[in-house]
Length: 216
Image (cartoon, rainbow, N blue to C red; front, side, top):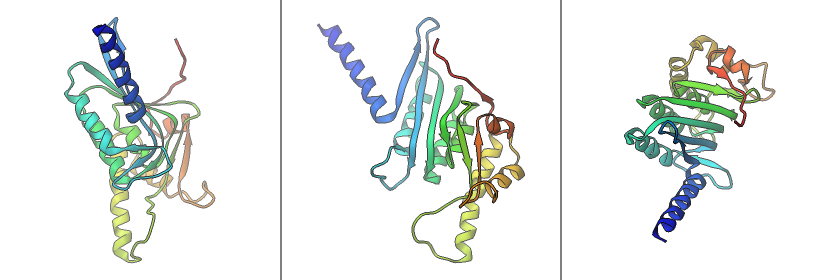
């Protein structure tokens, strides 16, 4: 009876982790390996709570990454990405944390990894994208009111330079090419930027490889 109760509690805990954090442990019992799966889904939430939208909370992700690094039973990390982007500071914090891990890390872009999701995709030691996956590269945007002064635009440039530096240090794309895609005026009708689909992200050097998913 106690064994059944313990098993039920373990299943309930796993279901709660999937529901709350998009997290699950993949176990390879044959080789005695455990892989931590972490999903970055919806909008990356910063200090302000986003209502009526699927979000990934950085204050949930960062402790989980620290826990993963400290857990000797975990051999690797798989990050699934289906994000429209979100808070720049929070996204960069997640990316820096993943890049600092000592264990093998892999990222997989499923639907999309847009905006600040681009640095997160490149933060892993090796990155994949599905053929229909998309990545949107664009300049830094800001919502709400801000002071229309030269110092404000200098601050935007500072944030943008941090993103460019991170992506170019963790992928094969050059600084010049990444900035060119960011400021492209001929692709998006009402905005600056570039949309990369599957193989295009690999050709540009942002992602390592295209992968076709299949159930075995």
